[in-house]
Length: 157
Length: 139
Image 1 (cartoon, each protein chain N blue to C red):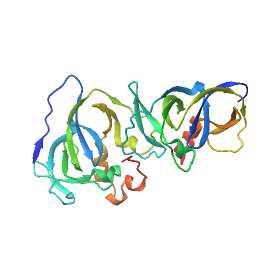
Image 2 (image 1 turned 135 degrees about the horizontal axis):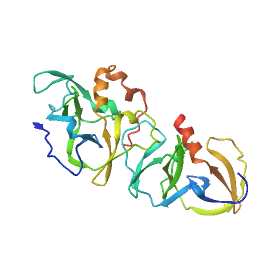
Image 3 (image 1 turned 45 degrees about the vertical axis):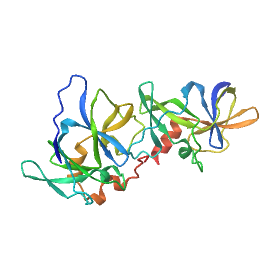
Image 4 (image 1 turned 180 degrees about the vertical axis):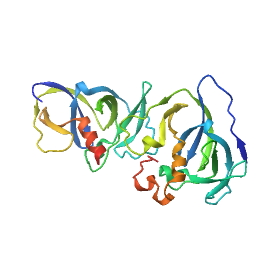
């Protein structure tokens, strides 16, 4: 299944996509997302996907970035201007984010570059992903050397 | 620190602790803790209180206690870091009290433990949350 992401214009807040990695929920600006695709069941995500124009783009496994282990990757977010696709567990829905709260200064690690801040959706606080990290990851060292592999990640899961 | 001041006393697991009452913003029933991936190991997650997102610190881990006990309350305090003040929450694992007491020098030097409080014949570790959290962040 392939879905185009064309959120209706809104005066109330920033349209966002909520996605899951295992039990963890994340927010990404829907303006960053061109397309959502299903991945073939039971397989590891492919290393490369194809954009609508036929051009190949690298696939980044989001669980490796955030250090979330043992999750099923079932869908692909093709990012608009970033020239990467991101393998995730599932899209949970769309919402409008009225405000992004800065990450408290107590957070001093890699999360400061991973997230634009925190969003409150349906009385749940979720991190708002900085899509640029996926591009940096695509251009960076192999996945095994990725930052989350070197750092102890506290997912609270 | 000299003279008689007010302190909030509370247990951190088995360890009786105290913080200056002036640093405490609020004591609440445990709030829902929201977690997400991060690498600041001294933080358990965040809580939402009066529209503000507040990091919840792992007090047992910061104090290097053997085990953490369930939170009975969340103590929310003002924390000063990098020239700004922000709120910080810690789990408190039992009854709290507001006491006036003299402060003695700490018997054992430990990061964030800045003195000893004696109240009703019981000894409490006086914590400086700024120092304690800074020491945990540096590890």
